[in-house]
Image (cartoon, rainbow, N blue to C red; front, side, top):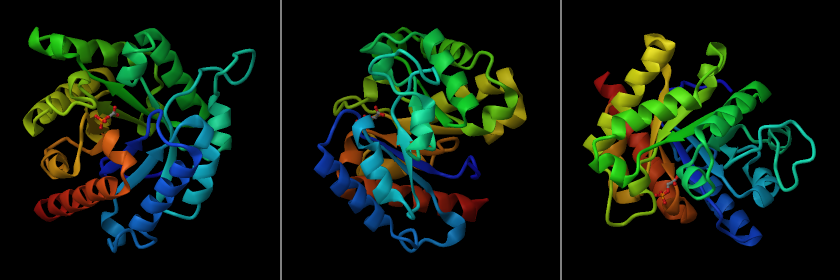
Length: 273
Ligand code: PGA
């Protein structure tokens, strides 16, 4: 899809939450909150907003999002077009349901479901080839951070996760930096400086892999306990191009407050540019 890649991009990852009724109510509240005029925001400084409900509610939520500015994304896929893969969901099915994006390599899939870098890489390549835009999540554990391994870990997850990705699909790829220790965690939050530093590491590595021009065009979102009270400080940092929001995306008012913070960060940036 066509968008300014570095325009602020706020994504709600609902994970394995909501009933069908709750999913519809939440989607409706987000759509109504943003409104057709984009919260009264002028055309030129719109942020991109997406929600990623659980698979069973994609169709229901997709109906509600139709005609709105809110995009539909999926939380995962299986990297085959079709076949005997009981319980799995293909890229074709996601596209069929109106999904534009898929989140891949989320830390919960890496750490709780044992997904390897190689498997994630396979998914990234298949998703991009199928025509989906991809958000690839990377991030270190607390132990890795304490042992000063953050940079090496990000390097490995990017090198493996993006191996053999064709250069002409890079415009449909974003990275989400999600330190594992900050996800769903009220005690450990990444500071804006920690987020900015990690984003710079990711952009540097990306430049080594794909060239400076691609790295400058790359959107890097921050994820890990983004809430209304810390969103503005994170989103105004250099190189923080958006937010991947878990817990706070389940409460419409909180998610909308984060979208507003992204709008004002993008306005400030534009004024100072
Ligand atoms: P959180 O989740 O906002 O609840 O920390 C973020 C994520 O896992 O994408």
